[in-house]
Image (cartoon, rainbow, N blue to C red; front, top):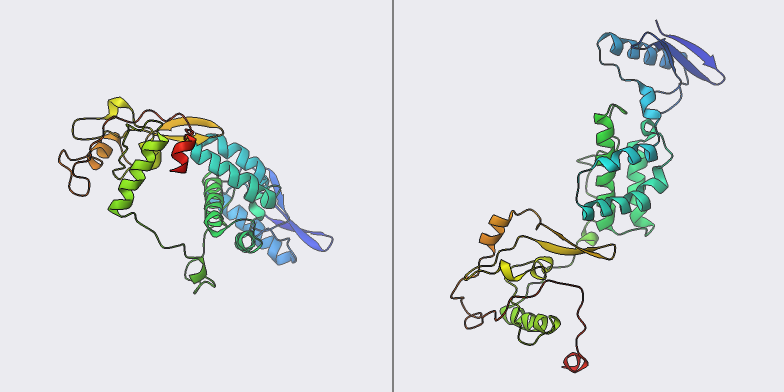
Length: 289
């Protein structure tokens, strides 16, 4: 049976854990100390009731600091290097400086909401970086709930809270689309950057990383097979598959018709682009043009 004890200005409760050992607690699930005998006794009886129902989780597991949990969580993520690099930046710059030494069970939703707003208001980062940082913290704490370290995720966003202040000021700029003429001029400019005036690179709904990764074996008589893209990470050029599309779907999506419609009629790709090997220096005479 649980019994409370007076500890100075606050109270502590002792109860039987699942292994029949005598456990103690001086804080509730909200992280606050027990200020009354009844609050401590209710907490202890609740823990013993969970033990009898086989639902008890040791609250001492939540004493682990967030920094220690992140060091266990991060190596277990089977993600690409670019995603992990973004995660590492948010963790080291935005999350750990604020919550690193804090125990998981002491984190509250109010603190996390204030932290998210402070990142933007103090100019630490823009709105496009604040949202991914909050989402990443939510993911980290969700896995802590799954592991049984905490009972609930304090980083869950509260819905239906009313109209947010300044929402109209945070909208991004209007998207701009290239006209057919601008697309042709862009292709001519890319032919200059390729290092050879004989090349004419035509972008057909390709991402830039996919376009510069094209090799000779990727070209067919009437289509282009897009199965890779290149990106720069830590000073290295790496290859990976295009996002969200398998190679078969990509090749069908980016098929180039044998008889293109205007304004592409009469334009042909003379020679496939070489594999991207970094920025190409444009001759002075061509730069002036």
